[in-house]
Length: 238
Image (cartoon, rainbow, N blue to C red):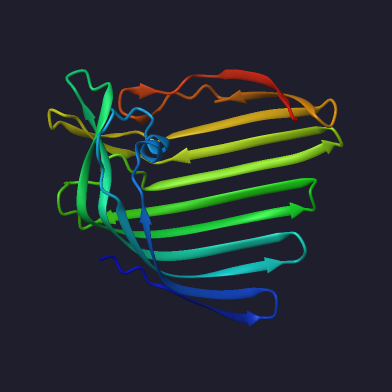
């Protein structure tokens, strides 16, 4: 029997500007193979996996400044039951297997901001700190990222032209090989830019330039990312 709390409250400090939030929320994550490979695409085939129960106690604030700018910040104490960690498998280490942990705590701090000018211009940014601790079955939180920074920009420069950019950076990540050797991967950063041109209401073409600065890093051990690469295509709407 799983009891999932869903308790939350909000308090306005000043009208339409500051909002204080607090809550206790529980969720169940179904760890299907499809879901797990969205986290780590190099996971080997698994026959069965336990679901993860998550309970989050949090407090934070949200604020809106003027017509366009908003930001929020939240601190959480999260408890996971049956949390999956990813470790390298086989002698070559070219796939991953799962090491479950019965109970894991995470002290998380998250903040984000956005500037929106109607539908023409949007810029967002986020920062997340994770402090995993109290593992029962694993020495460290293998494959997790302690610090993550994200950003995005969307600008309709002209009626038919969308310019876009995305940024992602993360700190070092601990890893464990099947032979029990362990170490820490270095962090990484990735900047991409792109454009989309609407030729008609139903046909658009697009181009993305990924890893603009050709950075070399590994999000997962033994899987270095591509260097600078260019992708393009067409979108047809029916």
